[in-house]
Image (cartoon, rainbow, N blue to C red; front, side, top):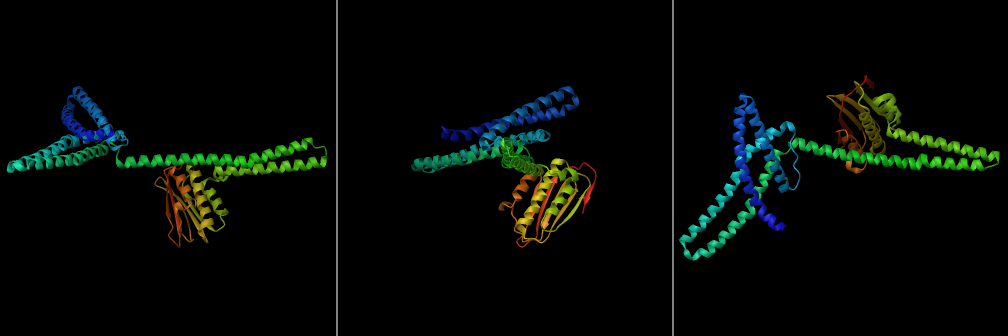
Length: 383
């Protein structure tokens, strides 16, 4: 059944395209009439509105047919571009639709004419000529018809779908959203694991220790057990503080992005030169993403670069926040090498940000991160 459909669908599609091509001609004439009659007021506007409605219905059918031929969904164009793209498709399809069918018919007619001429010249070659005609017609049908059918579907996708830049933008946003969801799920799992292995385990230990103290009659032993419980409580609080610091560092809330990056640079085991000039503060989610990206980049410098010093530069201009982290190390950093650069890229992509890695063998290395964002509060500058 599928094989029959593959054979029947292309010629049927060409025939339907020829019919819709004639319909496109009619709609173009009506559109022209509606445009000319616009000065008449109500009647002209009503005619134009109805013709555009019919054109939208026809293009919707053609978009669905093209999607079926190509095997993937064709999104509608942006509302601002939709009418113009639909009219452009009508103009092109009015010519291409009938022309494809006419070209195939003309080719078949020419082949049949050649067969008749050769038969007239030599009556003994009738069987041979007819066999050649069948082979020629079959080749034309198997090659030209499906090819033209697919080309018309591609044309419909190009004109009736979104602009290529918009389609690419949609794909990029879809991928970044999926990456953000994955990163959020991984972060939730990390928090659950840290709570289970850290604070929860220490609280359970503290409860058991206090239970032993409750049943103990020796005062010295009770004091020792209470001391152990007190130490467990302190360790649990330290674990919780570390966990909170990993979610949203207090220094980021207290001192802002500039101060938080300055603090992260001070914790780096190699000297770091910090040059930050922000006219105002970014929004908190952006601050958090940039801070963790900078902290991860400095961690990579300390672990993998063999550098003697590093630098951090942060600027905002043209609605874009730019963070550069570099070092004088051995270079060769790659996002696919499992050094944390992939995580930085995923974190930035959630905010439509980008990461550019320049790290030739032998160094130096510089990571350039850019995020589109607006700033909102008083100027903060650290150098």
